[in-house]
Image (cartoon, rainbow, N blue to C red):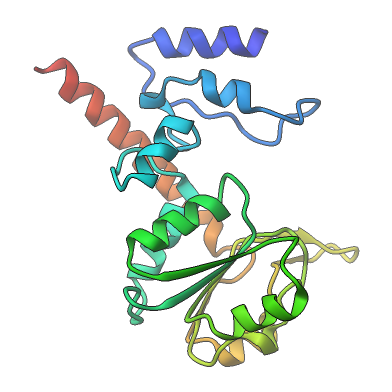
Length: 214
């Protein structure tokens, strides 16, 4: 209740242009009520159903940060995006699902794999991918040997092993020998997510200023 009241106060404050809920929240397994309470115009994470709906309709507004950041990364490679086969492993509301929408808009043929995808189908889908995005949170769920030669690999997963090392969801060493581009873990997707959060915040502030100047 206190968090909802705080969100209401921030929604009403004209000096505040961006609100986000840092997930996961201790003791709150489902934060959807909090996310839904945020004014969509201040939802700089891009998680509000209204903003995700705009993305589904190809109406760009405040878009989920990690998928948007990945699209920016893809635009800075020397590899084409339009017309390519893209496989997304993981279908979370914050990465996998909106990532599929982003890549559809970019002109990819998109395959989504999830926990019900048979292992042989997963392997076949990964081997066929020109663009591979993996966001599951399980170290090594995609062996690097599966990566198509020349593919672009975006590893969103971040996992801490028993020895303290941070690794992604893709077998990095083998994948790096096959991919044309691959994001490291850590230091790959994370900084792009933060940069995109700043971009969304700036755009929210600009939209608010524009609305009040009419």
